[in-house]
Length: 164
Image 1 (cartoon, one colour):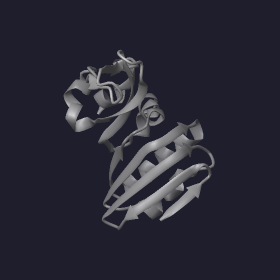
Image 2: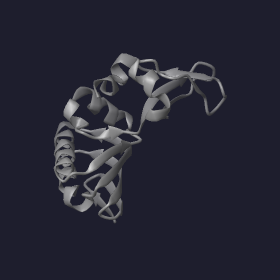
Image 3: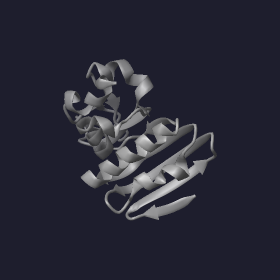
Image 4: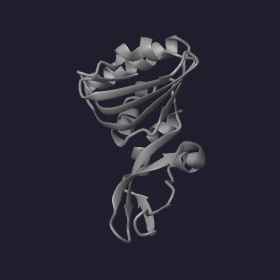
């Protein structure tokens, strides 16, 4: 199922045992993401937020309601590809993660060689120890092959990982 909720595109795949939800756009007062709970409830729910580029306070409130509703239905929730705006909310508001686990996130990286400034996908399992220790991995630049470094303070960007 595909649909639009305000300026948020929602795609839902799967069945009652496993659902995959892809969100692209803005999670704000027009999205009403909390109302998605009945449609996406399943034993396992993977929510891909890589395409979420904005969240405001009303959107965060509705997001928390969504996670709580899914949790109350016994869903195991996995957040995948968390965008930078999503990571910001996870760091600021502990309830924005709820009982969900995070499998991957996007982090701002900068290449010292060519100056590329881009969001890089970090799979949590591959870098779990480093991220929890606030030591972001050095990555290879997709443009020039040079070394890329986190363009933020690790203590600020990865805080939510240390709390769970």
